[in-house]
Image (tube, rainbow, N blue to C red; front, top):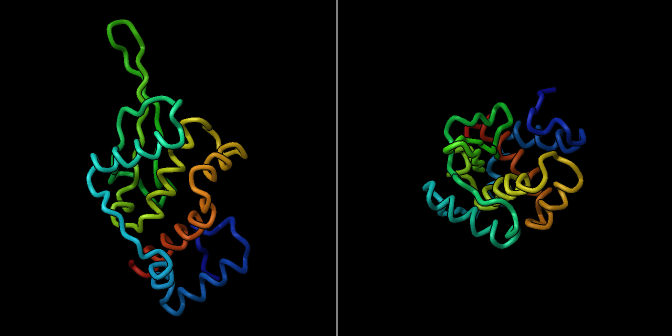
Length: 165
């Protein structure tokens, strides 16, 4: 049985369905048919505006973001689809903190719902550092289909890895 690293925590029957579709060479096609809406967020500036709009809508009281960008160095293979960091810098004897969100470059071409899901995930880290119940409730507040989109994204990444897109 072939291991599917992106689907490790899911029930065996779901993994088997994914294996069957992979064997038929249809997993990517099924995901593309389900999520055929492309996005037009191509540049870092557009990504910043996109993230800011979601943040303004759902997390007005949270800390401001200093930087949002696509990062080609993030390795999807190491399960880093996005990264939320707090960077402290010394400015004239005062410590200034800046929050950054980096999104893996694979999302530049991914379907729109997947970009939204990963942005929601990283924004939720502004309030909740850990992946706990409160974190996932916040994700669901911002994106009601969060769990389904996360599963579909894992299928999409599996298809990219095994079928080459």
